[in-house]
Length: 113
Length: 114
Image (tube, helix red, strand yellow):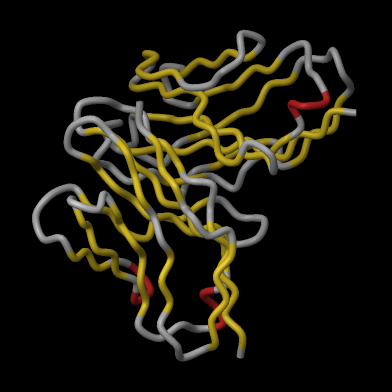
């Protein structure tokens, strides 16, 4: 069985400060890892993914994430947060030998001006 | 705009009724996924189709069924509706349906069961 944990329901940061959204996972075999963002009344939008290769993955809107195999983590980061980054963020994991993705419960990010 | 369309946007119905949600994937995408998003359950994977065939099944109730048609659009049928079925239902599509493909989500159908 596979699972994703996003330990923080909410993250609050000031604009211009670094933003980190945490994610840990459990999966059999090699993981495929994703981050998605959901704005109010919208569907999820893909931000970035880790499939293989470099542990540091760069994605849309200045976001990046680091795959850490030993800690089974895939934290999302942005060096300087914007008010427009305020949204609900989902981490997702799927095994390389199956088709199902499991999503975390989501973390609400609020960036104050 | 992801290129995935879903109809209707909103649906209000009564307990015991049956509804059909429709999804058109992005042009060229062969795989369609259905998800249910509710406050208490979060985002739950229901089912995946690839080129007309069921590929993976998640937490889909027996009262729910889906299919993907030859033109690749998909329908999710929900029957004997209960109050707890009230949720946002998302459709997503991807190119090949493999787990290493990102999924593109539609805007969702908000179902309210009264």
